[in-house]
Amino acid sequence: MIESGVLGKKVLFLYPPPVLSEVVEELARREFEIYLVGNHDKARRYLASEPESIVYVNIDEGLREPEWEEWVRSLRADEKTSPIGVGIISLNDDQELKTKYLMDVQVQCGYVTLKIGAAKTTEILAKTLEANEARGKRRFVRARTMAGTTLCAVNLDEGTLRGEIRDFSIAGMAVQFDGGAALKAGTVLRAIALTIKGSRVSVDGVIVAHRNLEATAAAHEADQASTIIMFDPNSLDDAKKEKLRSLILKVNQAEFDKTLEGL
Image (tube, rainbow, N blue to C red; front, side):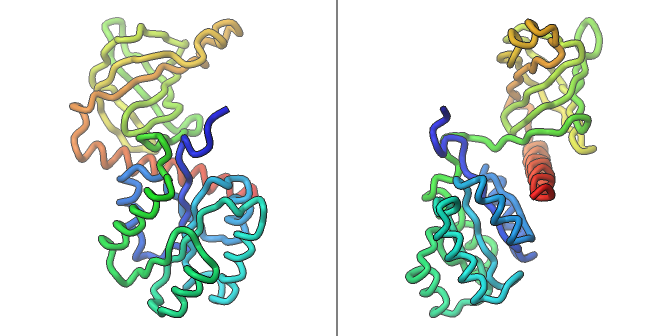
């Protein structure tokens, strides 16, 4: 059984205003797992199944402020959602309102006034998320990809090896190669071409392991085995890192939106 919080916490921004876009990108850059949601009813149902999450509620949108107070109180009172960390974001700098949410409602993740600017907002949120162990023990946010949306290709002496990326982070990826190719651990791969959501990135990497190889081979489904590749940091300049982080954010958000549709 995985220890609670080891894999980090999902951080939801409910009805995020446009001024928060720069902040969200920076938080993702710092390896927090960020999601945006524009429906408080579906957010509530989602949070009931993900009690390790943190949610920041924009009390300026969606509901009237008294209704938001009731929504937050009910979230904290429900046994299924009471473990969730709740914070408030707003353009309203009214001290009485702050005191109500911080002292009376007792939200755990603060009341952040967005008028203070993107840089300061980012620092406050980052410190709060750190204090609430939002990253857990993981170092990097991973994105799981949907079948048919990615391509990985690398040229070897015997020809071009192609496969689908099953998941990836800024540090590495898991690939299902055509035919279930199982190259030896330690094999260095140069100029691996990644295509994710139409964006292309070229990286170097090294094979470190194979996932599910024995189980899939026993079932005669070796093409389902995944090859684990760690990226060579020297092959990732700032532009490539930014592209990968942006793709992680987009891929995870797309999967999150799909989950919400079913709620």
